[in-house]
View 1 (cartoon, rainbow, N blue to C red):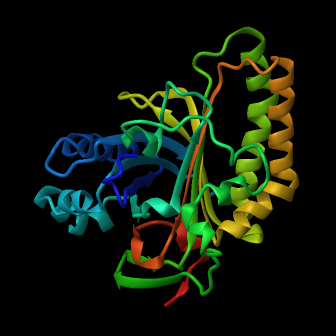
View 2 (view 1 turned 90 degrees about the vertical axis):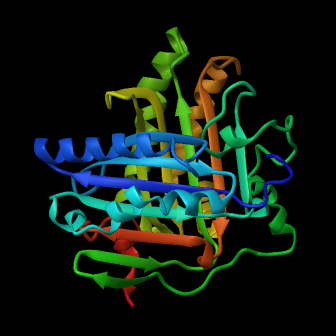
Length: 317
C-alpha cells in the first residue's frame, strides 16, 4: 500500500430476494451500483458476488474498496445514491437491503497472497507488494502481521445492539475490535489432477466448514459467515469463491482456525493436495483480515430477515 494511505474503506452493499420478479429488482439495483461506481468518489475497485443464505434467500453483493474513507463518503452522498437508499421504496419493493461498511486503519489490516501476479480485494489498491514474509505458515502468524498487535491485545467487550431507525430499517451498533476476514480461492487456471483434487476433495470440505460457520457460527464467536461466488456481468458464476465472516474478536477467529475440527479438515485436505502436486499449484489463494474499532463500522439493514448479517446476534438497543 502507498505510504500515504492511512486508512481504507470496504463496503458490502447487498440485496436479498426470492423469486423471479425480486431477482430482476435485485439485478437492476446491482447494475445501477456498478454505473454509479464510475461517478465522483466511486470505488477504485469492486466485485459482485452471489450466495444463498441459511434462510434460503438468494443474495447479491456489491463489494467496493477505497484507499480513503473520505472518497467513500463523497460517493454515498451522491444524490442518486443517497435518495435511493433513503427512499420508501426500499422497504416496500419486496427485497431486503443491507450495507456493511468498515474503515480499518492500515496497522489494523493485513492481506496475503499465494502468488505475486494476481491480487484481489484490498490488494488491488496497492501500487506494489512486499516479497515473502516471515510471519507466515504457523498458528499465530495472522496476529503477528498486524503492526498494532505489538502494543495492543485487540481484545473486545460488549454486545452488538440493534436500533430501529423507522419501520423496516435497523442499524446495528458494533463492538470494538470486531474482526472481519475475507478468504478466497480461484481455480480458473487449474487443470488435470490438481483441478480434480480441488473440486472433488478440497472444495466440498471447504464448503462444509463455511456452512458450519453460517449455521452455527455464534457458538464459536462468528457473528455471520457468507460463502460467495464471484459473478460475471450476466450474473453467471466464475471459478472464484471466497468466504467473508465477522467475528467477535481476532482471538475467536484464531481459536477456530487452530483447533476446530471443521477448519482442521479444510487445512488437512488442502495440505494433502499440496503434497500430491509436489507444491506446484495453479490454485490461487488470498485473504484479508481487519480488526476495527466500533466508530469505524456501519451496519444498516432494510427489510431484511432477522438472520441477516449482524442482525442475527444483535440485542435490541
